[in-house]
Length: 334
Image: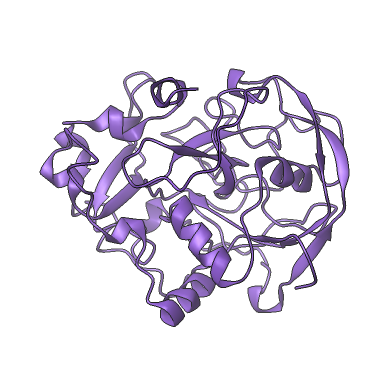
């Protein structure tokens, strides 16, 4: 599959959508960061300090689903056993990594105009994508009605320069790219899961495809009409701290909803497509990685991707306020 074919297959091409779209760029959000973080909830959530990795046994299963074209065809898959984080990597955990390594995330660095020809100067500034709840929308085709590229948005300031993670140490870290997630995983002597490993872990032993098509009752998703009405019946309107909902049968929290999770696999438009050789894409190369599990923005009327078989591409160098990650260990014990 050529790079041009791969780009054409992406379901959401944010950079392509907002080329020259200065109306959707802001450096000072007019609203506060509650558009990223939900209002306080009475839910009792996991204490990440007491978390651990859990063993995911080897298994065979039917990978994929049939709700959206990119989820098919359903294919036979096998994974060996591995250890997996019980929850998404938190702000506190990522902060420890940054303090130890002085790592600078993609969203904190400017884009190279040579690798991103055609972008306006504002779009070349350090920043990331942030979700904003609009008062109304004109159709659902133009995602720029609720997504903005915000200069100054990054993992420390998920909704822009005026936002903060202070007091939100137990929330999943967001505004990190696949490169950032991989750097953290390597620092921990771990890896990112493959798409198949992630899906098998989310299934928690259920080999059949399509068993989780209903909107989960115990997950952080969108209740109401996306993107203008969210009742918050699940306890949160925006992001939730990790582990606020029951774990699956393997002991994994938030595999569905809350934040999309990065995988190690370069995105393919179909499961039966021959994968390209592993590569380390540079910023601006147009490579996308597969993300899994849906997020707090998934609703029945839009993005029904709160399912184990759901998948989407995420540009390798584009950080977003609804994408995080967790790590795995394929050998030994954590």
